[in-house]
Length: 212
Image 1: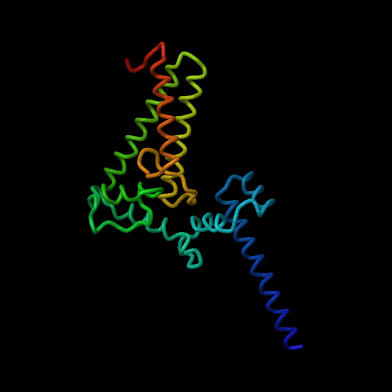
Image 2: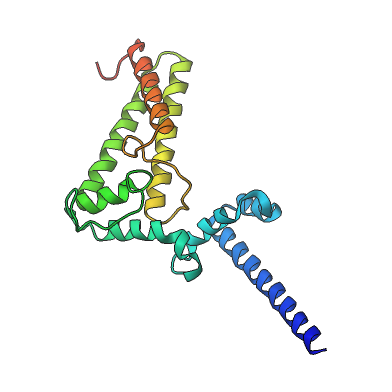
């Protein structure tokens, strides 16, 4: 009887723990994701893998010790951005905060730490200028195909920047989206420059030019 009671107690504790985790995850998803996306994830819990759920929870509760390994890179990135100051620690300095794989998805946090707030703004300004020029090329295109190509490249650049910087600022989960023109990479860099070539081709074949 004692063993049976102990086993029943462990089973009850496991059920209660699972219910608590499920309720906690449901509240978190409902608070962060749009209602449609949250309903989809709750209706199909196997849609995301376990580590993907953990990455979402790591953004919501970065101080949770159980998620320390998952949130480590983002915590270091947020710390690097916060300690960069106005002009930064300087490039290639030992004082810079170590960020795992900083040359890839978290290059923005390294640049913010090395170049400071002014350098981080300069990075955003350069990206914004490229996107603005791409949008102007779309507006100047005389044919529909050119407008669609340039607008699609603009949208891709814009959302890549939003997602990557959101990852660095610890407001979006890590999903492996690089920062255009800054992150190291293989296929992503190749596709980026193919897109740039398409936009340049649209600009060269424009009949009405915005930039001479």
